Image (tube, rainbow, N blue to C red):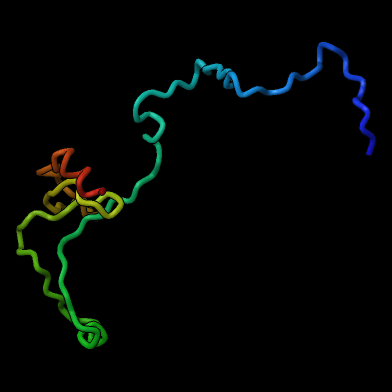
Length: 118
């Protein structure tokens, strides 16, 4: 390799970067970011939890077709709406044509949702 500087026309010459000033950012008029706008299209997983229970490994291995697992939640009690595994709301299970849905009855206050994320 040669230590010679290539002949570059003056209008194309590059200036070295300095630590004194950050590079200028030119905002794109079609893309403005404010607040949470940058994450609004990030996918999250929603799940409805109807209840939980604990079992021994033996009881779990004995499960089969027709087995009934008793949950710690009573019939008619609201179920939890989880977003990425964290409860954010509660509601009632509803049937819509051939599918299940959730009618939200209570949304946790923001501070409780943030506490659950910590």
